[in-house]
Length: 69
Image 1 (cartoon, rainbow, N blue to C red):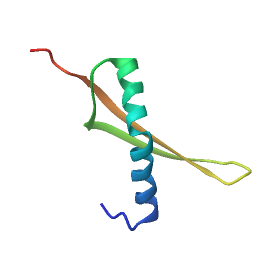
Image 2 (image 1 turned 90 degrees about the horizontal axis):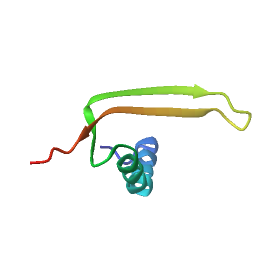
Image 3 (image 1 turned 180 degrees about the vertical axis):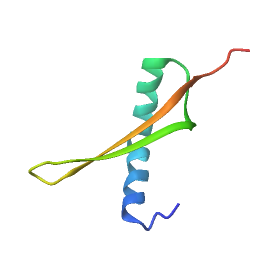
């Protein structure tokens, strides 16, 4: 990962700051498990905004509940 790239740096910063919150929200909505990075889709859209266009990044991964042994 090239953290010298400003966009990559900001994306990693978002995960560092909000990752635990996102994890708790996923756990609250789905239960214990993970979001797949293999069965996964990414979408990027531009949304016009008078204050400057916005980037909408959608990460869509299959939820995989932990198995009970």
